[in-house]
Image 1 (cartoon, rainbow, N blue to C red):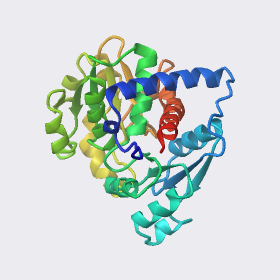
Image 2 (cartoon, rainbow, N blue to C red):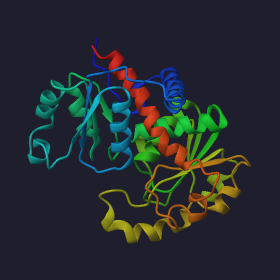
Image 3 (cartoon, rainbow, N blue to C red):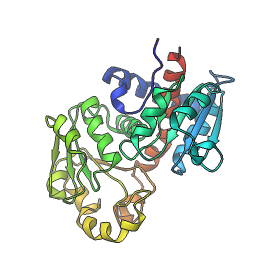
Length: 303
């Protein structure tokens, strides 16, 4: 049996994703009830970080511990990965010593090359192209608060970045309509848009994109590695803030999300971030539970 990886949402079928989210909510309830979930004693997760993160490290490390295993943090300064060792060689060596690998890096080709030479499952914990683990948490959060997202409409407002592109994949896998509002020149991949044209629409006006939407989503305007573009991006994205006015154009029971970290007053208003009924904090916590469900699937399917 071939080793299974999770590099984008397309690596699982829609039915598998639904089952995974059901399991994530089940694990969440069990964890809160004090259930012993240590099903994988002795299993080791290697966490390869080329990009730093709070939520990714804490959620994977805590999740692996709760499953009874151990998580090993690897940064470029601590390994040969930062000294020019070929990705393929690192994959062969690391995967011979651990049971699953999580990678958070820049080019998507890096996780693809690593997975191609890994004997154990590889999880994409973020690349410049996709962030599928965050989408698991987002979809779990919507389901827990509003039920299935199939047939609903989602508005993405902001940069056509890795989160936006993962929402395009999610529209396909979870069967919802996606309207994307972003400034000219900041659109997501044209090929990805074209291949999902039956359910994804590019809209120039954020108000039009938000009209009647069941879910509004945004992200920072300048991602890691784009700090030098911050000022130019702030000017281009100023009309694309997720705020109370935009939310008022959505459906009456619409939710809004942000993958964090957030810049209050830039891509999202402080009022929405700190609103008592915000689900953003549930969304952040669900990284833990969704990834535990993912780790279960991959560890159980490993040859």
